[in-house]
Length: 339
Image 1 (cartoon, rainbow, N blue to C red):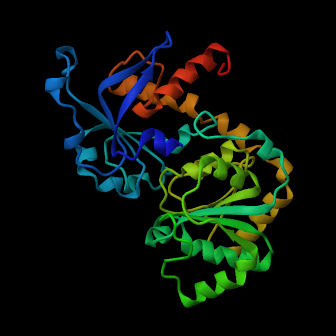
Image 2: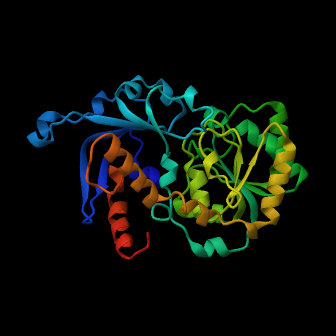
Image 3: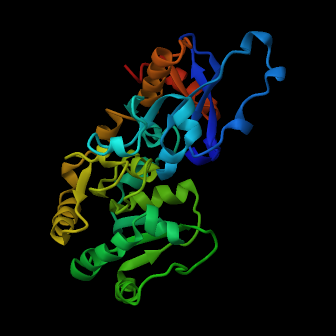
């Protein structure tokens, strides 16, 4: 649902929530979220009222791995929101640029995605789920190589059962990637332990699938804004995450899940075994919502924009497609749900 709200445009317009509850368009400030020239996304000044013909300002929200190559973003952004650990961010961010640890995935919660509490409380039919791309990008961005290696431990050694969703391209119900002969043999042996769901699925289906598992498995590396991780946490499901992931590492805490080292299978054995057998020790949703979610993240983004670009007078800001979500947010604030 979050993708349908914001579409996939490289540059996003903004809306903001005023203290009086009014949701307004924020003119002349745009977010660069993918590698783009930006020229065709600039508004036509001739169509704007004269009072709104002000210099256009930009900031960047790092959502794809190649953002560091985007000259338009490097030349025009007032600040960058990024997903990186402090020890690696210098490799992928412009020097002498204001930087904030923030990702699009921070905004996900049950105001944006369906969360059925009845599903959360049902017995778990599977141990884990894994979502990937059914093309070469699955290797690059979704950790397909790491997944196959992990299958040897999770399924063939530990006997865990998983659900696998190769969600793109749609309507192709078989692997169309170049696995090695060894990898194909591993997947063949693991077939009795894996349930495949091919192609794009509805949010309601994802809700049922995630909630029916003990944990979400994320062997991803070059993933800057892993919304599936925060969807998983929003549904109160623990996570098992590759310690080398670009974005998403910050969501792993004692009460949300565990990390594993793809070079050390023992870390995978211990982490997966602990999560499956100690579900009562985790509180993924409560921990995640104490730091992230739409209200906290849109308020944080408004703070950055008001301080470092211009004062909009808005308390919460996000992409234009989220106008309705901001309107609902105001009503929930009036009910005292975000004190």
